Length: 120
Image (cartoon, rainbow, N blue to C red; front, top):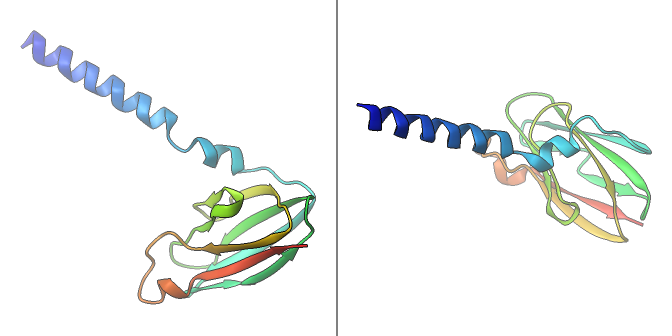
């Protein structure tokens, strides 16, 4: 009985430790704003706008607005992964084109949820 309680206590401690470590990048992104703010709306299997031009090498804030359903905004080339309404990320992009997409399977039109950011 005592061995079982010890095992349970260790397992619970490990789970709490993992929960505390999860989402490190997310907390760095949420709530910060700097420079130009661009709101990207996600709804009905589309992003608005889906083509975005930003100044290169300057701070720009991307803000996710989820109009309906469950959507995210991931921009792998800029290390952005916004998972909920109102979340923000400050980016400083080198000149180039950066594709973005929704990484939450949101229904039959999920594959249409994509766009591009062009830094000039």
